Length: 45
Image 1 (spheres, rainbow, N blue to C red):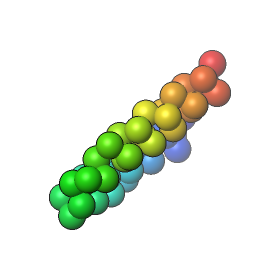
Image 2: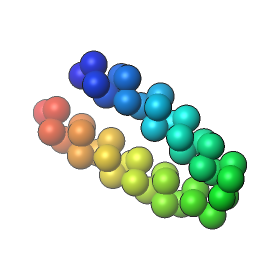
Image 3: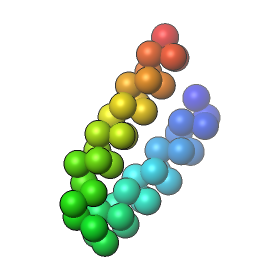
Image 4: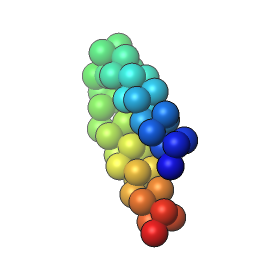
């Protein structure tokens, strides 16, 4: 659980920077983020 807490802000920061540089990436970044969070949530159960 500690890894997830430390990882999420880093992922959010990188995603924000990429969205500022290339706004078209927003859909892909959001989709990947949701998939990863969903998988981590199912594995945690």
